[in-house]
Image 1 (cartoon, rainbow, N blue to C red):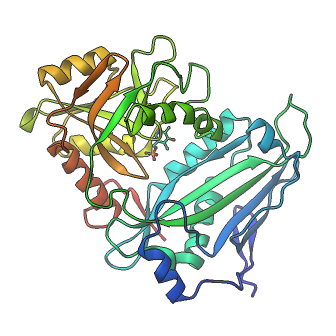
Image 2 (image 1 turned 180 degrees about the horizontal axis):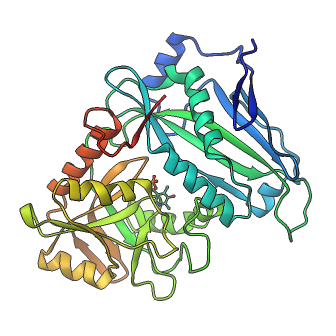
Image 3 (image 1 turned 180 degrees about the vertical axis):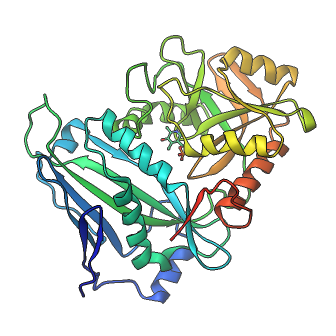
Length: 371
Ligand SMILES: *Cc1c(COP(=O)(O)O)cnc(C)c1O
């Protein structure tokens, strides 16, 4: 079948899988897909070569790649990614939340890693094309969605370490995902990491760069060893100022009821600028809850939790949307936030945001793109 389609001067070649799952096989996989374990029938790929630009755009069957052992990304980690979701709205249409923000952040990550930028219309078209062919994989069940994973890595073959690659591969594939919280929302316990650093000034912390995550696994393992679910990263210099969680930004709720106000650490260059974080900076004031970007130290965190001034803490990101934080542990002991259960401000923001994403609430900021 040939059903070519053109964007940004590029024509996508359409190569359909002859091993597509049947509707019955697909439905069986959608019952309990886990997170990032099940993949749809196709993927999109686009190649880049210096001098030639982006070329060889296609939709092709999802499947393994063949790589030369000397492929640059495997050695020097020139590799970036994005994460966003497609939702099935009540009227049956497919939608995603602020995909143009993911496209823009992808290009900021690319620039930091000396990689080529992908024209935003190509990024968006790749999503549209994959949903055109694999849209039946977007789950209908509440709290389920199709997680989209665009990424790009260096494909030059050779061990020269002094220069960025001159060729790259952009890929997009998709994975149906269930609720992060099977069995209800459970507040997490976090470990304040003083032994390790995620990001330093001038480093790569603001990029969705693969190496940032490899560098975090040991600290995450330590958090688990200490009986915690997640690591909280602190500033590189003093390990005092709160930065973020492993893959989510952090929010602090001071006061309660009409007096509740929100605070999140500012984007100093070492934090990942989350799109969920940015959306909450707008959404909270819409709901009458002031939200500010101000630093918070671990001493203030503890003192405000103990005095009761700090009433709730939660983390936010695409994968789990909003996750309450119930307990905090560190070398200096542990403390609880509120009564350790999900707080009303956390749950209200969660409901509002999920409502917009899934088409149940009015999208007054134009955050939804329909496909
Ligand atoms: C992706 C990510 C986030 C959250 O970003 P969203 O755009 O809200 O999904 C936060 N921190 C880190 C380290 C991340 O990789």
